[in-house]
Image (cartoon, rainbow, N blue to C red):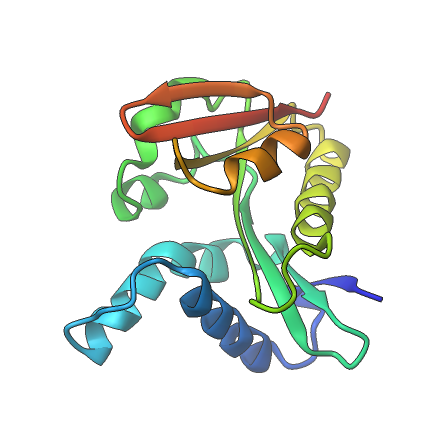
Amino acid sequence: MIRLARLTDLPDRAAALAALEEIFFLSTTRTDFASAGDRAAFLRTWTGWYTQEAPQDILFALAEDGVVVGYLTGCRDSAGAAELARTIPKYEVFADLFAAYPAHFHVNVRPGWRDRGIGRLLVDGFADDCRAAGIPGVHLVTAVFARNVEFYRRAGFTDAHQRGPLLFLGRRLC
């Protein structure tokens, strides 16, 4: 049995963030770093804003024994997150679509726990939070030929826009 918990509701945030970091590096395609500082900067690029500015929108999937098996970092207002546009490469490529799909997220599941519905549980949990807040849509950006595209289509992300090698997938909530 898997349960979801917000970072802000966990008693040991440091342990949760350490698990997030571990899963992040187990999931990323980048494996070579010039230094520990370079590795830390890469992590900050993709998770730093979320942990500092939107910890209430970080969801963790916890196994029965409390082990973190997945996480989702979310942002409810992509257009209003100016710092992300300065930090994440190509963030603004799809800015013209943010009004219809204001919220976005990144999700990763620990190897060995994938293909068990955990990613979908995290995505649906974030979408439910956004819907309850009156947010009309949620989106993500991935690579055109990424293996996760079919997962997102099955999860209701049917509005697709391609720009170069990037693919925007949107899911209407209201």
